[in-house]
Image 1: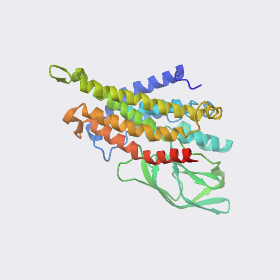
Image 2: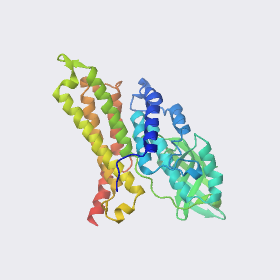
Image 3: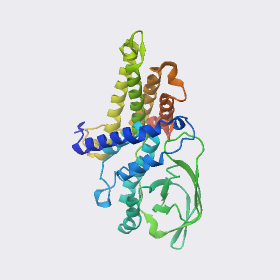
Length: 356
């Protein structure tokens, strides 16, 4: 049965991350130099602090040094971090989910050689890249350029899918170079990875890794909640017509609409996350045989973009000022809508499922 009650451990993790975000992340994320939509510096200090809290290794098993968190817990943490800064949330969530897949694909020898350093180094992140692969004796040789690789500029280990499995390529391997991607239509870190005659020993070949769950739904929730909380606080102190504007029906109704959107979108995201850990719920028909992750990816970013725009309208003309947080939240929400395959791509996956 799909249970909406969080466990004591999940509540503790949520509250701990929320307190950390309020204390350390938001003050740094809302500094004037980061309110510009382009060329935002990645917040290295809070990112390191969050890694030290165990949020980078959250999804690893306890035997490997992680917390053994399920997909729902990871979604909750991603939302909490995104409410402070979606860039930090994206980097950590991407690494955490790849680590979970990588752990299952590694041999015992690889876990000791590569996974242990990953757990011990708070600055050790992962990225999934592509390249042309040829076999040369006992080695694999990588060539080619992979564009728009998430976590590229902070990754110390690249996972490269090949026909036989997954090649594990250290960042400092000869023939590997990384260049930060220009522009800002992404959250976190993004770059171009080039492999030039990069030789990788066969001992670095792990098993196949699957696809990581989309980040955008949980990121969207965090951004939407941050915009809602900012609008709610402002509406209680901004006086118009002799009373705070929240006392005016138009503003109260707009805020109520945002609150409704948040709760409905969160339900879709949590349900999809829970279902990914409980495939038996689909098998016994407790849940529909539909791509719930794609449904959340299509629904949450679209609903949150409208919610963030409504939150900005609560600020009046100030909502469009570039030095106001709402301007940043609107931009961040639009990035979620179009990142990866985007909401439209997710809709096509749902369409394919229902037309089979």
